[in-house]
Length: 302
Ligand SMILES: [Zn+2]
Image (cartoon, rainbow, N blue to C red; front, side, top):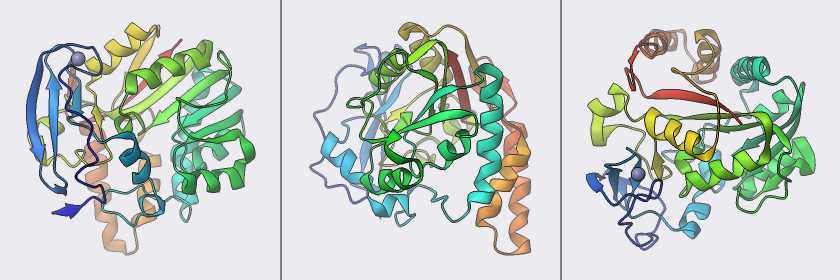
């Protein structure tokens, strides 16, 4: 059992309606007992949204993102990219190249920008701005990118509406207690024709279905779990027009292999490239809303 550093009394009241669609048809899925405190996960019978219930309160959530989390000191922590920039850069650069097929330039906002590595790469083409909840990570991002990094959330940012050409949320949405509010605010912040990029897990993936409660994606920092269907339905409801879903990500295999080299210390470790490649190509298989794996990236145009 893993101590999650969250206190057992850090939970809000149990929700009796879906926080995404308001529907009352909530079904208990399972309890994740790997962590202390353990937490329950429910699924909405109407929209398919999966969520921690009851959820951690705001104080517990903000206290969660301390130095330990960002420097890899905790069991379910952020992958600190600062010492392996050359391995992470191919992923960032490829993503920026694909974003530029939609939008060439303008203001770009990375919500949950952590240390600002992606933003720094994006700065070749876009004017970079960031939002980061963690004072520890935000201070580092500010040291690279200056005062365009807002330490806080989408609920208290200083940016004007219709200001951004691109907003990115890479592995952010699952951390939010109210992802619908964040997506609504993002749409307001985007100019008409602006692009929203969301990377999060697709819980309709066979990977998530087969592993069930043992799926590694269930962890204390993750409060909100989407399916392709629940996310695209929500984006449409909020008013996004053209929506495109990429499996597993919008770029090819090579940048992922490069990124994985940040963990490789011995020649023998390269055997994991077989696993990464198998995962990448398995992810291309999908039937309707059901995909073989649980990775997806959604591009949505305002
Ligand atoms: Zn719902």
